[in-house]
Amino acid sequence: MSKLGFSKDASHERWLATTIEQVLEPSIEIVDAHHHLWHRPDGGSYLFPEFLADLNQGHRVISTVYAECHSMYRTEGEEQLKSVGESEFVAGVSAMSASGNYGETAVCQVMFAHTDMTLGNKVNYVLDAHDRASGGRLRGVRISCGWDKSPKIRNVVPGPGMLSDGRVLEASRILERRKLSLDVWLYHPQILELAGLAAACPELTIILNHVGSPILGGPYRNQSEQVMQEWSEAIKKLAQHENVFVKLGALPIRLNKTLKEGYNPEHAPGSAEVAATWRPWIEGCIDAFGPSRCMFESNFPVQKNWCSYLVVWNAYKRIAAEFSSDTKAKLFAETARRAYRM
Image 1 (cartoon, one colour):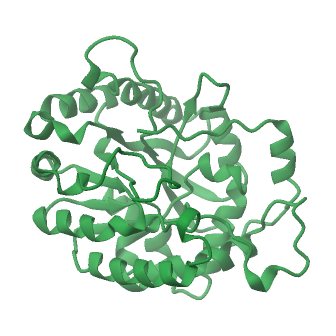
Image 2 (cartoon, rainbow, N blue to C red; image 1 turned 180 degrees about the vertical axis):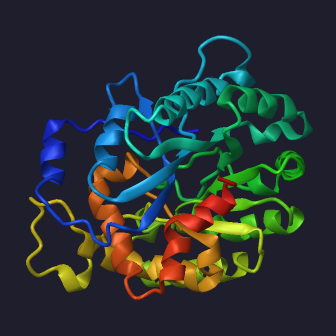
């Protein structure tokens, strides 16, 4: 898969610090349903100490779910087992966190790994290796299959149709039998393809990443209303499959029309701006899936390119401000616990 990065320097940290906010509703328990840790050869680094610094900004994050990101792969051995190095790495971080020496958050309490889903019915031995390496923390795998017909879009895979590939269906049925989940990262024109997989594997827990990643740039620029309509219709059809969950977050922060006045690019976005920009997409998911199948995510450190950890969780709290305490509990923690069997 493509390697996302975060290699900002101290000046970026100073830029993020230009927006200072108080933590909203600090007593709300949070399970961060999606974050990464990595060190890239190009100098980008976001490891346990950096994540702890963000966790210590004041929100009550009680546990986290590690999302595979091509981190710490083995350099030797069979190609299909190189990704097992990531599970070994995560197990070590989780064990450090469980010592109690680094705060109360259970960092990397569970994880989902990378496995080549085109292995079909041969995927079992790779899953076994991840399970052993993770020390029982493995909850599933992720397939990243974002593809669009426009050459202006960064495609993750070389062509369309991966979710309807017979080999992927075979591997998905093995996950289903093993009670493992399947995280899926795709672009919004592919959502209905995922609905087909959900129908074919009704007992498989499927977790759609990043509200289905609506494309708002490239050939879709200035077509936000059309994208919203197409995305909304697809999301509603996908939500008819009770085995599908959705993660809320990881959207672009566009300058909302209501916030143009007084906007200053010298300051990092605040939670009011993030909430106003993300609200239609997040509320659309909650309306379609219900809070018992929706969970908030930080997507750090990728999201850190645009706003701080404090700001992103404040934005979610603004969006959920009028919800009942029961609904908030589901969105911030309980749904993630159930989906990932925590």
